[in-house]
Image (cartoon, rainbow, N blue to C red; front, side, top):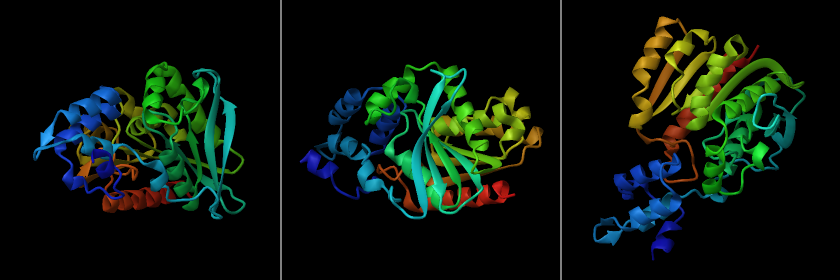
Length: 304
């Protein structure tokens, strides 16, 4: 019965107890294992019924969540390899999406969460391509074999990487994309959760080489690094995301103090991960609005 409920195509997130969402957040961020997540949910009784089905419903369904086909004629996606000196292995691999046409195109880096380049992030890269951007979604796990086909193993692999080397792989990916023959030389970056935090770090590390950043619910840049930011920043938050949102006041003060062009959008009634349409944390209206804002922001700042 629990499995049948979990397989429902459109699980209403309002039917999922907030405590289960909290457990899922712990699981997504690698603080508990999948087994512990499911076991703790199973032990939770809600309305006289085990909450296991709620936990199972939160697990991603990537095949159902695809919005842009691999064969969509508006873009072309290919896997590319490029050098990454100082990174995990010295080499990187990513998913490069080219819009239809000859270019050059404004360039956008799409940075994954804490589990490697999964199908959802590839789909986001295709969305960016369809919107007219040369998009690169690097796989931080490529030096250790690539995204393993499931998020659990992906989290374990990413957690085992040297953080500084992984950061360098993302910095090198940004530079590769900016200098690509099809790029117009203007670079933006967006990312989700870990990738949101990485977008903030890229703004610090790249300085004038990054023109625009849109971090989705990611850790803020360190205050001491904010003076290096020259990109225009649009920060996206979910209203129910206390750990990440607690960083905003200090970040906002630093951005203001250093005259960094920025705007912030807090989406009410949403949870961390609301843009990801493969789980019931997805908020369709907020995700659509946030993506439209992102595309518009990049068009303003990346079109020469």
